[in-house]
Image 1: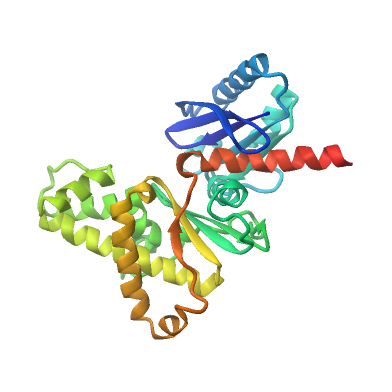
Image 2 (image 1 turned 180 degrees about the vertical axis):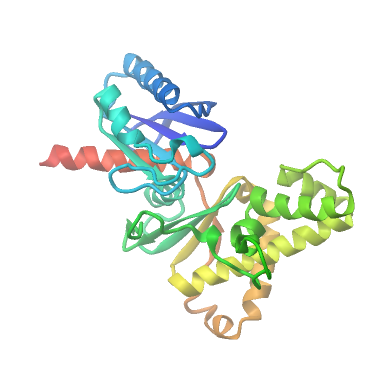
Length: 314
């Protein structure tokens, strides 16, 4: 048995999983930005699991940010107080158990290969749409992390003409095609230009609702969002030549959205002469991930399960 944690900027999801990736139980707590208190809370969850299960063999953690092989967190997404921390080492000291920590998008990608929609596939990408856009790159069955653990930061890529001044991330994929940092952000910018007193929208579902009732601003912003998302996917296809691209995040579970996205992706693809020529031969499909909200936790547990199993065989 293993304890899995999926650390987010707002909540920490946790669960007890078996060696097949089955989630036996799960829960969540608010993310505490005080590192020492945070570690104590994780310790309490592990100790509770140890009391109720015969044996806990290890702990798997999924977390945002750039995480090096030894567990050192160069960044931690929105959790600034965790920058420079090593939760892996600290939790091993507290629990006496082996701990593995993995970038959340990498963990989601790993989970999909273990028991999700990438089973039997060796070369694929996993794109997670949320506050920003994270990515997991799997090459020859192994996660590619880059020289510093930074590979897969797809959201940083630039997809439009640079602004004359200021932060060029304004035309990044994060700012144009993430659900919160892109769709909601662009809608709020456009809305405030017309009405400075308007409340910001932080839930993409509200923008889609406004679009459905015919609001012109929402119609315009959603239309551009679908195009920007499609353009970014084409960039990934041409750079990596994957067998498949899986995308996750809450929006990926919406069947109506998926249909609209596939239509727009096909339209954009058909307008790219070189890619269009290859579309029935080598161009990867872009499909929703299977595991949704549990993917990070499952992928993190797979990593520690593999480590524990390898040691047992020595």
